[in-house]
Length: 286
Image (cartoon, rainbow, N blue to C red; front, side, top):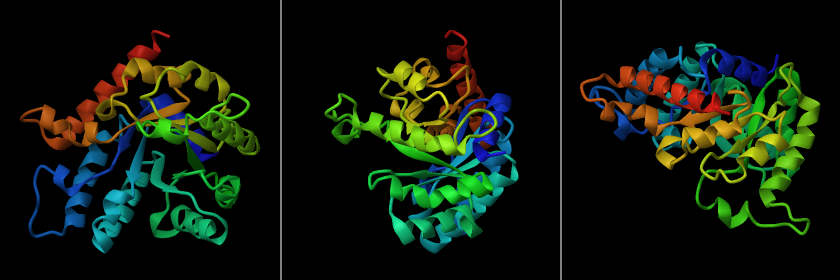
């Protein structure tokens, strides 16, 4: 069974909420001055994981938040990955690597084995398919997965991704088409490839067409909540409530600020439940 299969089964059981552990030290409601910044972040993440593991489809850990704290932060990153994977839920390392040849081989080794091992990682395809290929042996032999940037949720997506090719397709269509073709050799038992796509949920005009074009491709869908994506829009990128996970980071990590008197971990749980029901409600309307 591939990790995309496990992701499919997790979404079927718990819903499509991807809890983004993009934990900045300033997000913590309290700081233990006897501990390092990384230790405080680890404690916060531990409580959050324990509170949400029954209502999360997966976890996503954005490495930049940990890199910013130096070696202390990278220890927190490794420990956070370990804690999240111990739940049995799939864990995505949001690293967005995009290099070629031996460098990419080393990135693959770093993030699919050892201290920083994750189940699925994010990649940037700008340098071409040979920036993706070094990760594929891990998909074939160990069931690992990748989510490749395709059509992202940020306003700057219009700068490059939406540019038209001579045949009328957008650049994001070229990326999606190429990776879907490549992914045919890495299919799992639930009908999804180990090569997934990052499809932002904030530009929704093409949602139906994108979902129809990539029926066998799992989506990582950022943009819900803080970035402006609505459940009604997000639902169009899912397939009967599955086929994708919907990331929320600040919306969950900082939920306690909108729930006065509620502990941060309980507030995170409440927000996961609310988000799951919000998305499922819109999926039921389709």
